[in-house]
Image (cartoon, rainbow, N blue to C red; front, side, top):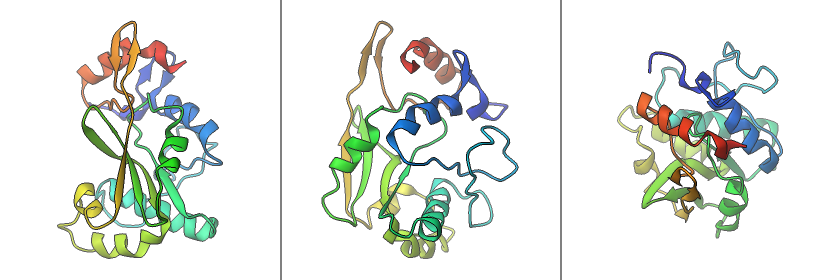
Length: 189
């Protein structure tokens, strides 16, 4: 989109700030999977990728696992959310947590018949398996990794708004997506 999309504005704030604001009441702490040189939200700690190259969202999950194991050794799961979906549900954590059947379940969000695996509650115990998986450069796809583990989808309904139905996992990848998100800006309050 020609610039860092997390810093694009919807209403009076950046996409990233909307995400953090919706997430903060649901969790005990928020970390950004970003280089230490990323300057937005300086009050939040950074957890940079532990693997070289920008190999995708699974590298961020791995970085989160490694951070959790080192900083919070009793933590069993890691919540991940992408940085381009500002309408995430305010009950995301409670809904995903309620769906955990076994400690090794990966619980992911879905809506409108589509899975959204970056919105996930991941067992930290998968860290070594994920690192071994990512050692093969052909292994980058989240769905392929998830097929190796028990995965539980949790369906979230579209939200009815005056502008029409809103997918809570609308992600912003194009100028048209950004314009659509701006139409729904009132839902971020």
